[in-house]
Length: 453
Image (spheres, rainbow, N blue to C red):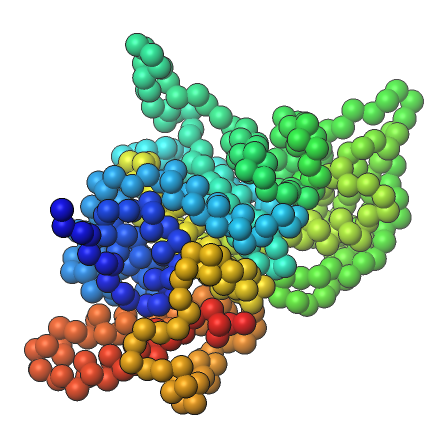
């Protein structure tokens, strides 16, 4: 029996990360390499992350191999998701996490793509023809980590499925029902959730709120100014005085906000708050409302905790605009789901290279027996004395997610450049360029987690 060949090597930090998923593709080296190559493509700077464009930057021709990997290869998206969540659990251990729940949607023409329908697309604020998913992210130390997603299936697009000997329509689930299913899955896997944050579609859902309370989870959820609350007979709505507090923004800046509590009759376990920029201008468009079951004198705490919703929106922007979440060209959801899962894998790759999580990833690598020195001819002493990755004029020192992605893109620039230039180098027989690139790639392959500690 012929032994399977070893996977080719591309960029060491991506090779190392991809090895964490290697058992899923055991015995299928090509599928593992395509998995790794798509990670390179998703992290790259190309604006349109289509499979043909990804194939160009990783040196794979017209992209048919990558299309086959997503549409035909036997790997299971559930196995990749399970492994990604295992890695995430190893990264955060038993640390308490805040989770953000929201939906994201994209316009899609026609009706050939499964689950595309005229529906409300929250991120563009109106009804359009498109596809929507419910997504959950964790927020730890200002780093967002992707957890779970599930497509929303409009009633008009439910498919027939086989149930025993009969065919029945798929069960219809609202977005709050989907979100609760996902949260229950996280709880069952041992994630220690200290707070759930969500927008008004969840805050206005009595089902969603009651299920969170059954799970004994704290929440801060947006609601509307006309939110209906039953008041005991003889009681009335009361307002506390506006209190000024400092709102900590995602970019590190501080702005002044004002918060007051709305008390519907007798104060209950669920409390209601209004936040605005300037109460003297009330009512104005800057006001927003939310409900919470957090206890105590929490006006300032609640105001800042609710701000974690901005991290949810930030996470969506990164996965969509930087990693190609909405760049798929498939009509079957089974393929779209694979694409979205690969985007989440790439998102986690960036998140765990932040300074906060990198030492924990290093520990995982050590348990997986992944080495941290280059196997190339460039020695550690040579690299240490001649190069510092942070000396690159475009290197970012701020440890945000987007800056981490920017720096990782600098490391993959040489191999992408080589892939794009190889045809010209061969035509004009410039062997010196191959030699130069080989040396440059040796330096890039020395880059690993130890340079981020």
